[in-house]
Amino acid sequence: MRRIAILGSTGSIGRSTLSVVESYPQRFQIVSLAAGRNVDAAFEQVKRWKPSIVSVAAEADADVLRARLKIAALEDIEVVHGSEGAVRVATHPEADFVVSAIVGVAGLQATYEAVRAGKTIGLANKECMVAAGELIAAEARRQGNPILPIDSEHNAVHQCLRAGKIDEVHGIWLTASGGPFLHTPKSHFASITIAQALKHPTWQMGKRITIDSATLMNKGFEVIEACRLFNLPPHKIKVVVHPQSTVHSMVEFVDGSILAQFSVTDMRLPILYALTYPERVSSDLRFPVMDLRHLEFIPPDVEKFPCLGLAYEAADAGGAKSVALNAADEVAVAAFLDGSIRFDQIPRVIKEVLNETNAIKLESIGDVLGSDRQARELSRDVVERLGGAKALRPASNASTRG
Image 1: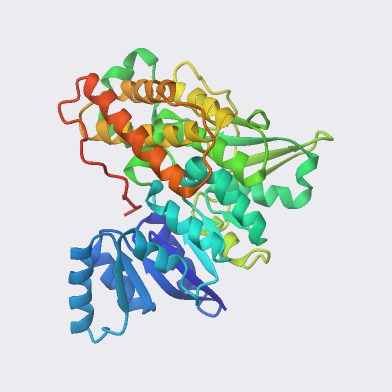
Image 2: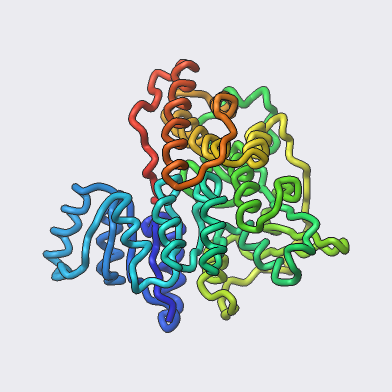
């Protein structure tokens, strides 16, 4: 029986994880949940799964949830809140596997503490690896526990790597759908609306990750994540646009062999793989191979999508540059969704922040969080200079999927 803690339980990955757990009750048990701001969803999850402890974002939300649980005769379930509450969930002594699915650096501290506590991590929060991947990966290696990727691309790489050693890898190919603007001329980018940017052709995701997919920044984050997860330099991680989203990733070995992983576009499959690794268990998530007609692979247009190039720049530098990349993107995307800047100004915000950030090595999670705060403040200044009437002054880095 694998005992599971979920960070971000009310978001899309959290809900999909609970769906997998429900399908395999003999294999999994939920022991702790971090649910963010969605108190109604948290209440329903706690009633269904009866974890030992649940965390929500704010103290007021915790008071509301605690009162509702008392009425439901579930007052024995501990309710906590904030970043400290998420750490409590992630390090719960009964949990041996932690699903990290909180968007942004809000999940960073809890994920790092879970690694330090010797937990196995199922990682769906790429921002953790972008901002602090060097520290997290080093700690996981010290602990001797794996970080198992849940993002479909890195999960695919992990599966392909079971056929060879890491020193036999010539390179990794991460596939990108190209987003909704693959064939949109760059000259039209200034007039792209929020609704258009949120219409992803393949996946149903949260708002930030959907915008990141439209700018290709999401793929840039995945490049950095792949470097950290598989201990490879950026030049060995390549991106290719694959509109069908059938092949999730490919690994090229030194002898010229290339292994590709493809499957249904359903996040339950990589979640199941991570939860049961190193086993493979039977599922009904079947890919209709006979429906496969053709596969396209196109080089990305880095002039039209400059965020990808900025990510490679940050990947080469590491440290504070990677932190600044994530922070600036989060602020810029929020400003676009708030109507403060145009779609084509997102990479401009990020570029200016990167240019103002020194490439220094960060020695602790405290250093990472301090660098993140500085980068966010600088990002808001850039947004204001671009004329953002609604520029985001209060820091907001505690969002979750859901």
